Image (cartoon, rainbow, N blue to C red; front, side, top):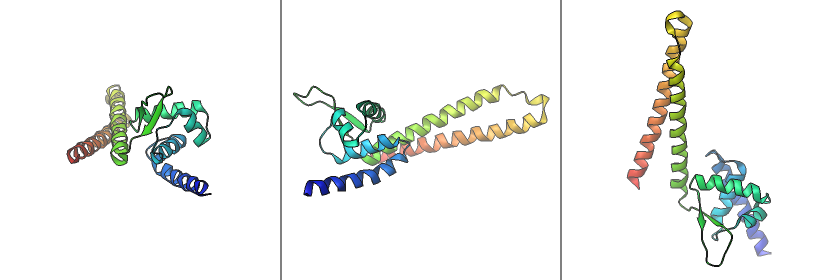
Length: 162
């Protein structure tokens, strides 16, 4: 009976924690998977994850790959075990903030570059309306520069604290 109540408690915690993790742009399955891995002290196989979350092994494989790319989980080697094992990285704040900040920097930089390419192709001399759009585009580009700069500053300050 105690094991069942412990499982229910772990499930409640994982569900609530996953809601927060989803705010970092993870899918609901990725968030639930990370939450369960974090709460579980032992590393797990894809089969164990699949059974725990009641999703297909393929779904777990896709989700674990995303979590690996974000450095939120680590592949673990254990002597005598032939299947891949995975474990959540336990430095929650650092792991999520690094991932989130890097994602914002990349996105802002990519969008700024795309907008600057568009800006190069606008011929403002032929149309007053295009001049207004061109000026607004300059403001939008500046916005992206400021977003990128702010996240770079946040990243720099975080690294200085560590």
